[in-house]
Image (tube, rainbow, N blue to C red; front, side, top):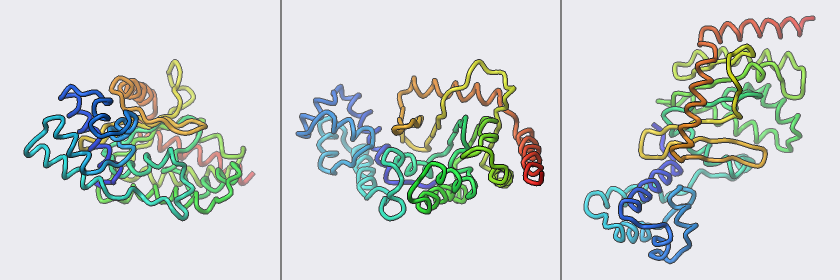
Length: 285
């Protein structure tokens, strides 16, 4: 399983949070020990920033963590001390709020994502990507496409995560920029090819699905180590990372409802084939 500096930082932060709680310390008390702000401690525990080895050692001493457990955490701190993913060159176009997601995606064991109005990035064909970015008015389309293609490398890992997608029928009928049968035919053929991979599961939620309502797009990530599982929710101004247990369970329940109403894999394949024929006919009309 791939491991990233970001995943190790999150794992370390989670372990330090557990140790602090077990010792009965508040974040402010830890800040007093380190001579920093409570906000800095919060960022350390969330994995948003790196932490000096001396600060980790000071925290462990304050918490009374000794012996083998202390050595294990110090080893994790050393592993997490490397640089995060490089965001220069063509990768610099990735928004800051999406970089944590991109860093952690290859390290997950399972990813479950729901999209209502567009094809999710890892499933997009190049034709769809180009159409989407140009219609959006992006100034560096080439870099954006390269980054999105980089993400697709997750499917070629030696042990990729189980990646489970639920896509609304709307996403398959609403092309970027409006009616574009050639773009959507290419996209559907691409989906049929990707769906053959052993750890890729794609399900369509048809318009006729029996649901009271559907939620906004979200992605659930689960990890093999003590990295805290989280939900990612994107909006127009950025993205939110939610790892509170109660919040996490709300999204798991929402996923289960969507999955229960969505088509099975063989039904989804047939749906793709029939819709592809529709777009093919529109091209030839």
